[in-house]
Length: 71
Image 1 (cartoon, rainbow, N blue to C red):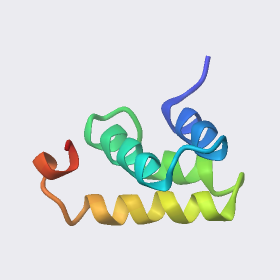
Image 2: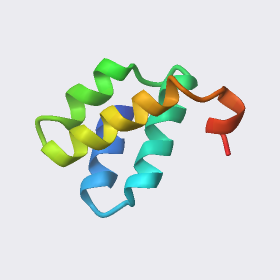
Image 3: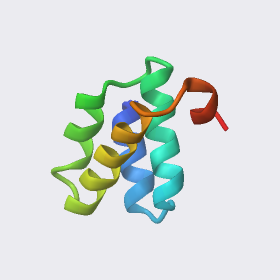
Image 4: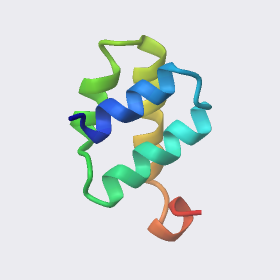
């Protein structure tokens, strides 16, 4: 079995666009499926770029209302 953070990291490393990775990370946190710390922990050791994408998505999630994130 896998975790949501690991799944997001896996699909990101296999070519999913940064925009969709960001959406998935924000949605996972907002829906209580992952924590910001868990997402970073799953992403950063596997790829510096992926760690940056996850951190950027979480920073943006703090600045947007939930309705905007769900689009």
